[in-house]
Image 1 (cartoon, one colour):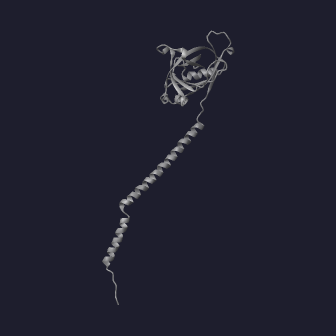
Image 2 (tube, one colour; image 1 turned 90 degrees about the vertical axis):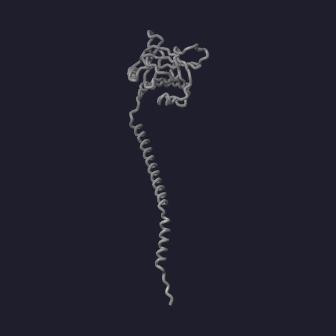
Image 3 (cartoon, rainbow, N blue to C red; image 1 turned 180 degrees about the vertical axis):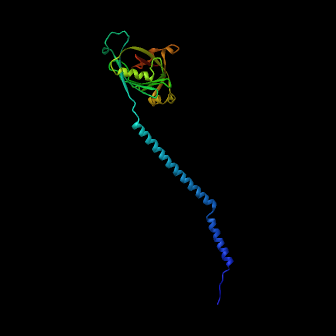
Length: 245
């Protein structure tokens, strides 16, 4: 009878080789790569989830603020006016300018509808007291015109509100003054004019203006195109004449 025996040393060597194969299959460098990939994936998912949560909070907060925040109040007022302060005619025989004003963040936003009897364009007028700028949006032309704020004519926001509170109690008779403005140049970057004027004049042709009496040189009025806006930001009505060459 033939007896077959195995060498234990060879068996251990074979097992050792198999063990080496197993260790080689679980190479530490490869395991590290897999671990890094898993960590990166978890970080990306976490960041994505946080982005969705923040977006929801921002949108939800804006909606809640818009719903619960107090609405800005519009104040209505009108003035009967004449060329002379000594005019003896009764107010209801005189031309009238109606407006509505809204005050927010040291900015006065005035809407001037088209008058019933006078030749004047409807307009939106914005006085930015922080940036010391006034913007006229002529609604007939769909064009904006910007000029430095005339603080000697335009009342501060609170005084303007007080004036409109008085106008809401009855008719007001006043006089007319004239303002002659000339377009000087086009403004291509209206973002520099601030948020409120940018919002008013976005996607509209916008021009810078100057008062005619401040211009130097010969003025060729015969070739100008002019239009007027009747409005008030004080206890008198202003006829603003804007001319483009």
